[in-house]
Length: 219
Ligand code: CTP
Ligand code: MG
Image: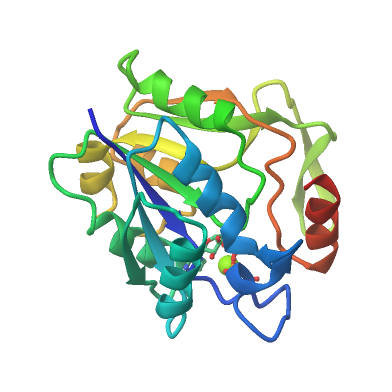
């Protein structure tokens, strides 16, 4: 059974507002991308990796993979205009005999192998996909403009993260649909059964400069 990772790193990082795409902003001694790339490469659960790089940054991405000795990197593709496009372009490089695809965002650098284990091993139990999720700590309200319409019971809510693992064929056919925010939503919409497994609070997503500081402190 071969497990391929698609690392979505092609975003521009507008909200971070740096002079370069988010994946190449410095985190510790390395570009942000290095952390998730090295961790995926070291994972015993991952056989091969496809990186989706920002337009014009394919070469630096390949050089970084070489510098880090990431021998599992099989391809580096130019990402698309949206995350969905970048994931589609990355998945297109995954060979048809791959059993599982794990999609991860480079914006979540602190990837622990136990999360990869949880999402990949859930597929052996017959699920079409598995995603890490965390309980919602705050009270959640549904609003209509400024008016609170409802207090939403939060025990049935989860905030989901990446890495997200899918049966390769299921993901491939689901990605043809449009209008999804994460791969799981595409698979859910196509009728797939996706399991939520325990997420990891350290899998913070770097969106703005304060997130970058928080992640750097956890390195
Ligand atoms: N991503 C991608 N291709 C895009 C847009 C996003 O591969 N066209 C990736 C990002 O590189 C990131 C992940 O999807 O790893 C989550 O996206 P987000 O955090 O929104 O990153 P950016 O789109 O780069 O940031 P912003 O929305 O602030 O521009
Ligand atoms: Mg974005």
